[in-house]
Structure formats: C-alpha cells, structure tokens
Length: 244
Length: 244
Image (cartoon, rainbow over all chains, first blue to last red; front, side):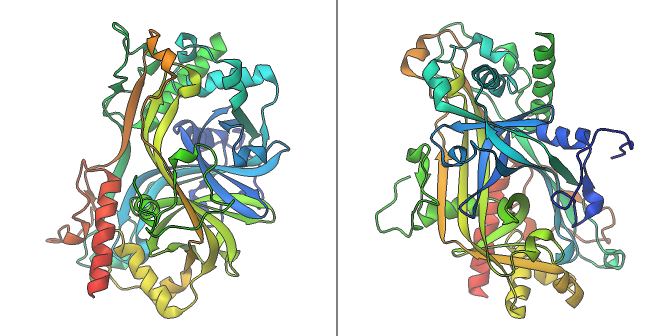
C-alpha cells in the first residue's frame, strides 16, 4: 500500500497505533474504508460495569461515520444512549499459513479497528433515512420496492452511530514467511486460501407468481466472493444516494 | 436444538443471558463448543483505561478453557497478566436474508460469546504444550514434524488462557421470516447462503524436492467449508492427544 503523505488519514495515538507488526499497519481512509465496505458484519466492543462485551452485528459506513442497529430493548444499546466508548472491528480471513516451524504459522487477513463514542440516532428523519440505508447499502434501491416500515417497526429498531475518531487497518498478505535457514529443511509448507463465497439463492417458497429477483440483488451472484459483492453494492448504493 | 435438562451447561446470569431474541439462545456446552470448535479466528474484547478494544486473533478450546496468543510485546497481552475481564466471541455468518419489509431483513448466523478472566500462561511446561496445540489443534500432529521452537521463540510468544465462566450461543437458521400478511405482497424475498470455502492449496515455492503435503492437512480439501474442516481437525487433534 503506497499512500501519499497528504491522503486523508485517521489521527494516530496510543489507542490505535499498531504496535505488534507495525509494518502491517495503515491509517489512511482509503485502506480502512475498503476493509469496512467489503463487510456486512462486524464485532463491536463496549463496556458495562467494567465487563467488556464483544457483539456481532450488521453495520455500514457513511463517510467517516459508522452505523449499526439492534433492538431498542437490547442491553448494548440501552447503555450507548449517552455516548459510550466503543470499538468496531471488521476482519476478513484470507488464508491459513502453514510454515516450517510453529512460530511462523500464521494467517493472511485484512482487519480494521475503529474507535469512537457510540450514540443512539435520535433525530426521526435521520433514523428513517438510516433504516433505508441499512438495507440499501447491501441491496441498492431495494427499500423503494418493499412494504414500507410501520411507526412501530421504526420505534422497535434502535440505530447507533459512531464518528470514527481513530482507526487502524492491519493487513497480512504474504503467505509463507519462514526463517531463511528453515527453507533448507524437508518440511511441507503452504498457504491455504479461504474465501467467503456466495451460494445459490434460495427464493422464498411463498413468493407470489411472477415475482422475480431484481436488479437490487444483482451484485450477489453464486460463486462470487461476498466481499467483492458487498464492495460493488456499497459503491452503487452511495452513488444512487448522491444522485437522488 | 434439543438439550436435556441435565446436559452440562454454563451458568446464566445478567452478563450472558440472551435478552434480544432469547428464543435463539442456548447455554449448554455442546452447542457453545460446537460453534467455537468450527472456528480458527475469534474477536476478543478487553478494556484498557476505560477504552474497549476488539481484537481479532486465532484461538482454540480445551475443555471449558480458551487459549489465544500474541506477541509478548502486544498492548492487549501486557494488560492481561493479572487476570482481566474479557469476552471472546466467535461468529459464523451463514446467509443474508432479504425479506418483504426492511424490518425483517436479517442474516442467519451461529455465534458464541464467552466471558471470563484472561490470564497469561506462565508455567513453562503448560506454555510449551499450549504452543504445540496452537498448531496441532488446526493440523493434528503437525508439530512433531516441524523444526522445533527455540527458547527465544517461546519467549516471544505470549499465550493467554481464560476459563469460560459464562457463555451463550445464539443461532438464527430460519431464512426468510416475514409477517404473515406480507406474504401476499408481490415482493421478491430470498435467503442467500454464504460459506467460507477452502481454495486450492498454494505449496510454498521453495519446498525441497520430494516434500509432499501430509496427513496433518488432510481435513483441508479444496471446496470444503472451513468450519467443517476445522471441526474435523479439532476432533482428531484432541483424540490423538488423549491417546498420546
């Protein structure tokens, strides 16, 4: 990754500085955002009474802001209404790496850690718009063709936002990296790639006659990787948004 | 999931009780452990100076104990030596679910959250043995054929353990679940399965002549799902361990 000195980047301090294997770290928006936008799911860490929680959830990005959602009744969200420190992390596992000694066994991956203060979206218009993008970020323009949300549904869904104050990306993409002298040993080593792959769509068995899969799902083709489809859908969704 | 009343289970209290969609929750060892053992990677949450961190790492289970590792220099591990509250979560994303309204859009998944006190492994024998299982849990008996670890490597690797004090599993596996009246609407809905699939192994280009892939990697066949391979390798590794 070659990043020019004036490319937009997140500030670095002791919270987000990559210490272990700092050569794998990056802080520029482009690198961090690409990792985020290639994912639908993240893990969010937050603290209640000194106890850390690590919760998986669906999320998306708008500029330097992250959004995620949950039930208005959930434990996590009740505690975030005042603005609580949180860390949202996305990780893509790309391979397992088998080396010639235990120490050099590893994995290729792309991860992004984002730090900030999580808060509930309280403005009604912003909440309605964010509930649209929660779906449309994945499936561009899908919401326009859906049964519209009821006031009760909107009330039952809490949306959380967090301005990214600090962030770091960490990428390992080198496969087998053994100590130089170990390459002369008669030991098998390999990089084993893994990919999150899209399967055959399973249409709802109760579809009405003549209802077909639409353009909103076109990025999601069987055999394609999910991160590629998500990246494409994300770009389309926000291009449509900008043109709307 | 049908669990008999006397099956081993983790205790339940306000920390780990599944509140949102409690019908999806389970606390028995078998359900929680199956989700853990099908994964190589987890996210661990911990707290430093009130700031939560969410860190991806490789991990494994022994009984009701979890292990993970990192550099002795890492920020996370330096802070865990005294025993720090942590939460280790594994999530398998199984599908995206497109429904007839925004509110019923969802995902199928299997996740396990484990709570306890994280501590460094300090006993030298336990540390050496855990460094063996870090590799052998993934690739049964692989360590025996590797260049053995040096004292410096062992020193540079910190191993963390955490007894699971509380845990919960949460599983959604129902695909499209719309409101009854919405099935009569001319709107397309589907379940889109996603799977983490093993690709073609990429042998190290510097292998010595005649060195071939061994039995230790046999669970990892191209086209197979990673969680299936990990589950099989895990069972073999600990069966070998018990027989050793």
